[in-house]
Image (cartoon, rainbow, N blue to C red; front, side):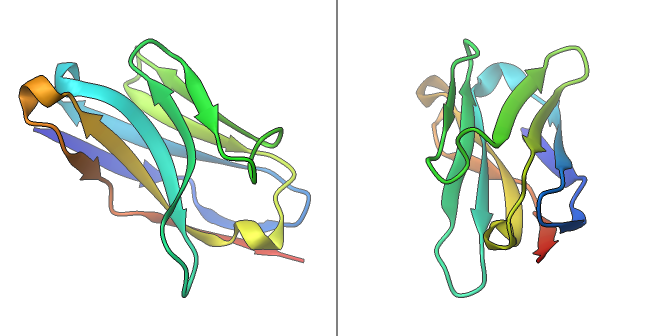
Amino acid sequence: QVQLVESGGGLAQAGGSLRLACAVSGATYTINAYAWYRQAPGKQRELVASISRGGQTNTAESAKGRFIISRDNNKNTVDLQMNSVKPEDTAVYYCNAERLSSYGGGDIWGQGTQVTVSS
């Protein structure tokens, strides 16, 4: 089993920065990719950025040029550096791990961390 625990959320002013961290523990060899998702009140959960097993990253258009996803294999963390934040970035941010199909597939989710950006 893999466990994900997010930290680093909080309050930021527009134009500021926040760094989210996802601590990964357990059978990490079963994971194909990691990602950060977010869900704002009344909206569907959406992908923010992902990083594959090989280190390839993908960033949503709304976050491109501002957010950077990275993985520290030594610390077993998946981080999201959020720069130039906007009020519309306000949401609960979730860490996600996609399990390899050879290990049953499916997604693992963290409990989420609240990010609030004031104008």
